[in-house]
Figure 1 (tube, rainbow, N blue to C red):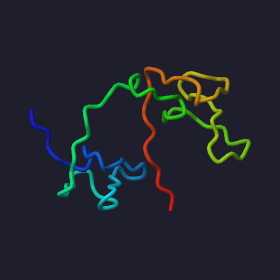
Figure 2: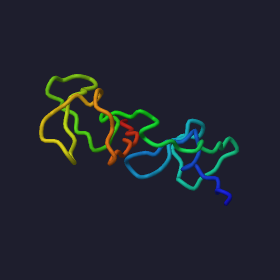
Figure 3: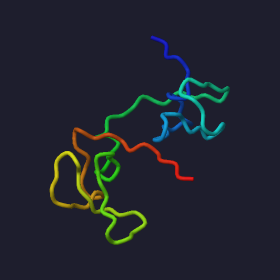
Figure 4: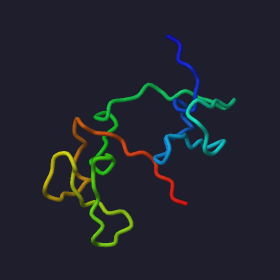
Length: 105
């Protein structure tokens, strides 16, 4: 089955948290179905276990901002935990969802 080209499956695009558009390294903010001449398909996705993701990379991880750190690593999982833990040390669970890129202007 041949896959249709779009910015949502391009290696140069990343999902934007605000409105589900795509942030393209070449063209800037574009819609999901936009396609340019520099389109390159994403390689076959690996499982999160093969990618060695940690809890801090998950959208369910809530970081603790008490210490006013620029990138806090302590926090808790909104699905499973009640106690805080270091998200950089613990491997991602089976409910892992990669954090989307957020753009702050």
